[in-house]
Amino acid sequence: MKYCKECQALVVGRSDKLFCGDSCRSAYNNRTRKKSRSVFGHINRTLRSNREILRDLERLKKRKLPRSQLQSLGFSFDFFTHITKDRHGHVMRFCYDCGYVDLNGEITILTFDDDRLL
Image 1 (cartoon, rainbow, N blue to C red):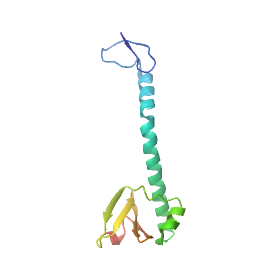
Image 2 (cartoon, helix red, strand yellow; image 1 turned 135 degrees about the vertical axis):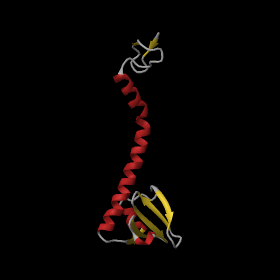
Image 3 (cartoon, rainbow, N blue to C red; image 1 turned 45 degrees about the horizontal axis):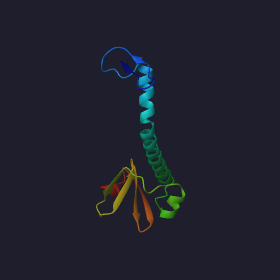
Image 4 (spheres, rainbow, N blue to C red; image 1 turned 180 degrees about the vertical axis):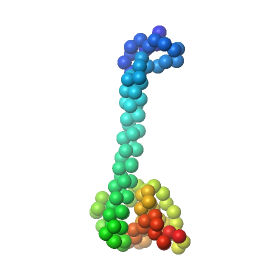
């Protein structure tokens, strides 16, 4: 005799069946995956926030600013989606399609279509 992994009710049917029904299977999977989703959720929220800060500054035509000012806006330098180098060897960090270059504490805002990336 087998018992449901979620509600401990008797499971009837196939020998490899683990749950008594779809609702118990969903509840079990939602509960067990909740922790990993919350970690990824925090990362994605931070990346989206970083992207919006960069995008807002770019829209305001504010292309250069001190690192401390960007940090005071809530930007987290620990989170980015990818890194690449421009033709001059400067490291560019991106939050999706918006990026920046940090040269000695001065941040230069980039966008994906920025001609300096070529």
